[in-house]
Amino acid sequence: MKPLGTLLAVAGGILAGIGLIWGVVIGFYPSEVPALLGTLGSGALLLFIGSRMVASTKPTQVEWRPTAPPAPGAASSPIASVLPDAAAAPAEVAAAQPSPPAPERVSSEQLDDSTVAVPRRRRRVSWSLQLPDGSTALVREQALLGRAPQPTAEHPRADLIVIDDPSVSKTHALLRLADGALQVLDLDSSNGTVLIVDDVEQSCPSGVWMLVPDGAALELGTVELRCSAVASREVAS
Image 1 (cartoon, rainbow, N blue to C red):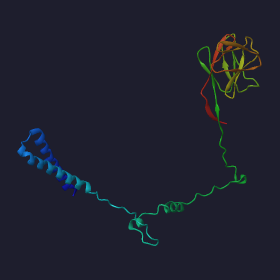
Image 2: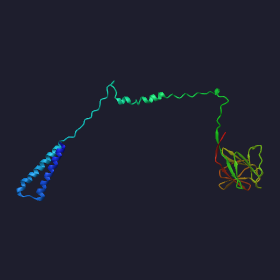
Image 3: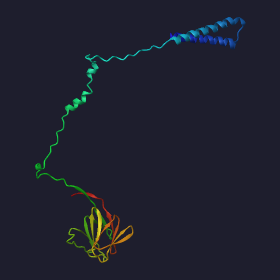
Image 4: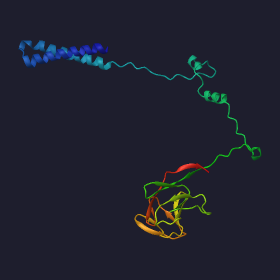
């Protein structure tokens, strides 16, 4: 019905348009009035009938109704029987995997002499001294500085750093590392020891430990030594 109504409405519109063009634009004679009115009336009638037919046509509606759930005990569909049960799958996988064994507790009586102790690791910091001749001396734990230093009973394992200068005493000063920090001790030297930090000089009293900052300088007599911390490394303790 809708295509036919559309066709009639189009034909009526064409006839009505022809009548309007004929009567308004072209003009007509009195004897042509009946024909003109007939054309306009026919076009209007066809246009009215086609419009009504198009308006009366209703689109086809499909009513959707939800499918009722299957009754208890009814046979399941073939697709549902093929698909695995998603809820039961994790439980089956968990049941298939064996649980890890519980760790055994070892008492102190079960430990024998073959037990190996793991050494602890600690960081060790070294310091370097820039000597007047341009060379570098490394301070690991303790170091005796002087024109001809000799190990003493109090410091038998100290490193010996020779500074060949007449203003330096035979055993002038002692350096040591305490928790990675460098300290200096003047050993009652003849010309003394001076700590220079940021161009500020400070005399080191004999027998008193003085903290040496990184980048500071030590003046033994007339000799200046530049002190710098070296990158740390891990050692077994």
